[in-house]
Length: 194
Image (cartoon, rainbow, N blue to C red):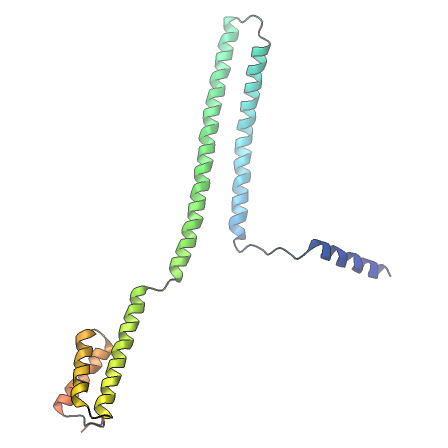
């Protein structure tokens, strides 16, 4: 009976919790980013606290000012100078943090773009592949014209056209060989060697 109650409680808790959240594929980057923010907060918080303390001391010294002596004025000027220096350091630190975060964002964007670029096929390879296919088809058609349809002149013209249009392809080399064979008479119309 106790086991049934525990099972029911667990099922109810599962239903209330809903489906599990998916784990990010970029979990390592998320962890690094959170760690970086925590370090940044740890670094900036003491500076901000020091500025607040100095400001409070300055306000307090102004509020309790009854008669200022030259020594108090010197001290006040010193505190104000320190406060200005701390403010300048804080501003510089915040600027540096913003720059680091911007660089990190740019690095992520660059990595995404590089991944996209890597997935894109080289257009020159694609064009070369199409050129090879076209040349092959023309040689195939010329072979058929010569061997099956007895159209010797058309076949010769097509072979020459392949050589002219696609001179650096394998099919152009094949067309040169066929032209040579036909012109030397070593191949008959059925494609067999004599």
